[in-house]
Image 1 (tube, helix red, strand yellow):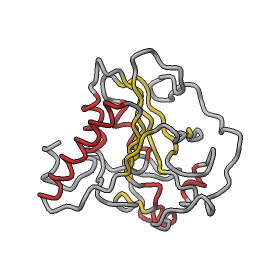
Image 2: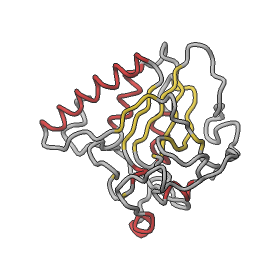
Image 3: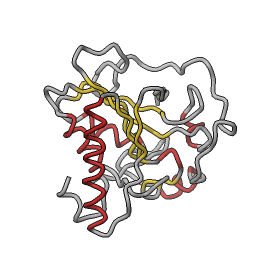
Image 4: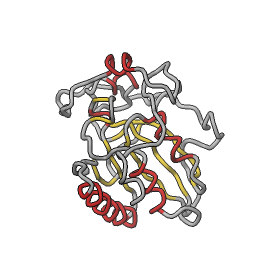
Length: 219
């Protein structure tokens, strides 16, 4: 986790978060339209959502991978929030050993939210990527390395010009091994960043158990 600390943390590529904008292009006007308050909503104030899950496709449009369980024995899953999920997902699916990736929402209150609802900041959810991987091919450490090095985890409720609670850095683990490595890598990266004059890591860390992952609707 050391080689990126000489520059501002974050991806080497530009990401765009908004419907109708091509990944690799940034449009300040669209960012302004989607800016939201930087305080978390409460369960009482959150949008009601719906009881019916939003339909999703069965396989990934880019690589053809299955998007939903069941997964093969021995695979692991983890949920990552590193700002806008459009470009974040690509950082994971290109990693050898990753079986499947999908974008969606987690960490909030609103059941089965839509993209537009999440963008209001009134669902409490972060934009996330669920990653399914084979730990015999790609160690958990390497998956976490992609997470930490592809966003700025010191920015609170924003990533660059994308402002809002849905863009917060977040990581939800599913195994004890992941939990241990998450804390170790967080502490290491936090120390390196502060040594270089950056802020403290603000990543939301929690077990995925009890935090439903809601798949994003197809775009």
